[in-house]
Amino acid sequence: MSRTKIKAILLNEQTDYAVTIKGWVRSFRNNQFIAINDGSTINNLQVVIDFEHTDESLLKQITTGASLQVDGTVVASLGKGQRVEVKAEKVTLLGECNPEEYPLQLKNKPSLEYLREIAHLRFRTNTFSAVFRLRHSLAFAIHKFYNEKGFVYLHTPVITASDAEGAGEMFKVTTLPFDNPPRTEDGQIDYKEDFFGRATNLTVSGQLEGELGAMALGEIYTFGPTFRAENSNTARHLAEFWMVEPEVAFFDLKDNMDLAEEFIQYVIRYALDNNRDDLEFLAQRLVEEEKSKPAAERSEMGLIEKLEFVLNNKFERITYTEAIDILLQSKPYKKKQFQYDIQWGTDLQSEHERFLVEKHFKKPVIVTDYPKDIKSFYMRLNDDGKTVAAMDILAPGIGEIVGGSQREERMDKLVQRMEEMHIPQEEMYWYLDSRRFGSAPHAGFGLGFERMVLFVSGMSNIRDVIPFPRTPKNADF
Ligand code: 4AD
Ligand code: MG
Image (tube, rainbow, N blue to C red; front, side, top):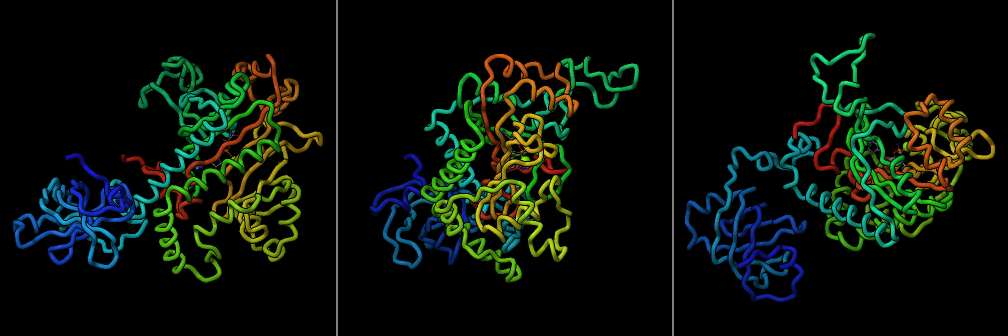
């Protein structure tokens, strides 16, 4: 008989039918009740065994973490807490799990920090299985959204010579030997000797290649891993993260903001409609976590309430200049509670972003028209000559979740900006060609996927929403 998933059994209204289930033991009580989970849902299935007719040695091996096959019948449950249970006719041990050694058995309620140290096993907990089912659903919803809108999913390269953001935070990719690489006369590593014949790196963003696609296909999006060699040990930064980057021909900044807002709301709605059990579990987890915080730091809304609020309220839209004015008028500024100074021209730090979103507007905020000097070369210069048509979306509890802009489509302005920022034109001939031949207004943005998962899951550390986090010194598996 083929295997039936626990989710299907729990959703099925019927009883009194035969099943074969396979899964892992979560608990075993009174030599009789096994709570078994197969990953298809947050909920365990209760299996009832007839211990008087079960081998003593098998009973000993039904321990937390062991993997089992159960052949039996789905029956209405007499006990509280579950509608149905499985009356076992045959229990087969597939893989034992020594309770003296199993880390998840040894610690009663393992902390998230501890689970991060045993990230290879943390999928087996309720919290992480919920997070990763949710992450999967969000990824699926992203593809569904863009597919329904007719966008082309464009695969941009992971290895590239370009530094899309011009921020120099790149991991080098080289086939040259580490210990004794060939060197030029002035002692520099000679990348001409390399496989690609020049210095290459892992991509920081698929945007520039995405723009090339948009200028022919009209509407594209990328969704893939991107890399930043920034040595920042924060709860919001990873060295390897996934980014979603739509790029649309004939779009201006307002179109771009509208798309981003509709996109974020669509994806959240999908999760609420399709991952209810997991979200309710994560909401409860958050309630528990918040209990350990001082009252002033606890969020006013529960997780599901917060998500519904985001669906039902338009995002606030303000310019950078307005944001600075609000911050300069704010209590924390006047009381010198901000760590970083703020004046027109400086970048917003996360403390400022969080003030705007969590204290001032209490909803997601789109900040536009930043000073050109704190943004990338490709952003479209506004008529004031000082600001660019940039937009960042700031989310409660997260800070920046989206960064994007209308792109500079005018060749002369783009070349001038590249000169000012010392970006060699000859290395970017392919990008400039998109402006040389049939240039058109266009815009796009990048959404940090893990920050989105953080927001929807209510988790507080970005390492807990990606299966295998890559952070400084964290790359075993
Ligand atoms: O603001 P960023 O750097 O923008 C770009 O890369 C543009 N090329 C995107 C575009 O216009 N197509 O990054 C975009 C988003 C940020 O808003 C943030 O959500 C996320 O990517 N992000 C990170 N997420 C996790 N770890 C990091 N180190 C991140 N750096 C950026
Ligand atoms: Mg940014």
